[in-house]
Image (cartoon, rainbow, N blue to C red; front, side):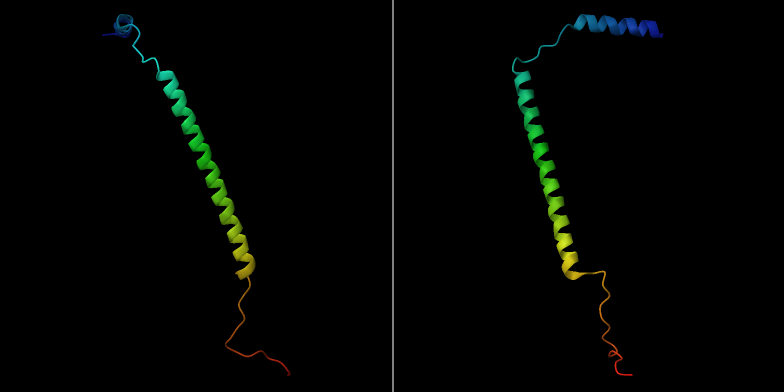
Length: 83
């Protein structure tokens, strides 16, 4: 079969089938499910932002209290004073 014959066969098949039967309440169900998915997705996104904010605040508070960038004082030798 060449391309034109295949196209003709496909067109003939599409014309024979007609429109498929769809349930009457399909639209309302899909809108309801879609809005539910959007609400869940929005709630999940807000929860993730809230968790990120809480983790950032906790890290800043820990860093300000622990000050990990400061070198701890040496405990092996006493300080040299009074030379």
